Length: 241
Image (cartoon, rainbow, N blue to C red; front, side, top):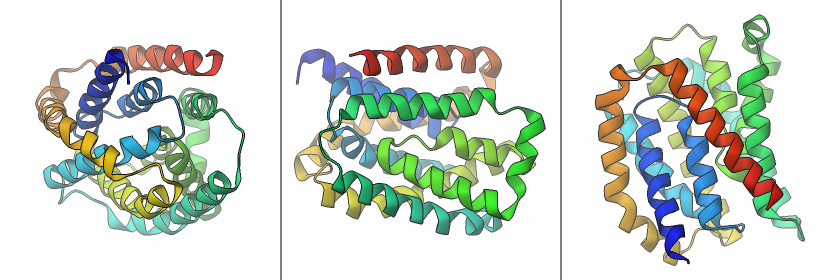
């Protein structure tokens, strides 16, 4: 890899830790940075162990705040989505993976921005809950990009901040662990990529610590606008090449 790629991976590792213990939305930027560093189908597989490490930290911080009744509704459908996405990825050839990640990210960003409060209450229905779970699982398997649609769902549950983060943390920990056999089967998570992950573990820990400490000082509205602009720019770069 080029020297700049290692910088991108380092920034991705920091953001992975930061977003898991603070505000959502930053994780998408980490996905894009990893795709810029490793512009092929192995990018999500390299990022996956980093996400699991950060999920474990977040679960430790917020282990008592998970709303399990919400997870029990979502996890089965999410696992179906993971399996379907694995089947598509394992049987598809000849596509540009960087562009695929770019388009998935743009779709998730559009959901986050365009779904209004008037429509958000609809996600409480059982059928739509299953659909959201399946989409979240598929988006996570393809590009580690389920954060926006899962956030849309959780926002309607009337959770406190700690309950929101705790439920989100457990959901992604369980889903990401479930993805590991599929990632190994696709050849995108390997012993070589795991070795690379170990080098960046301290940066993930630093991001998680700072996220927990600084979240109270962040202007969330301004922060989310800046993140969305950065995500838009990075996704456009992937799509346009």
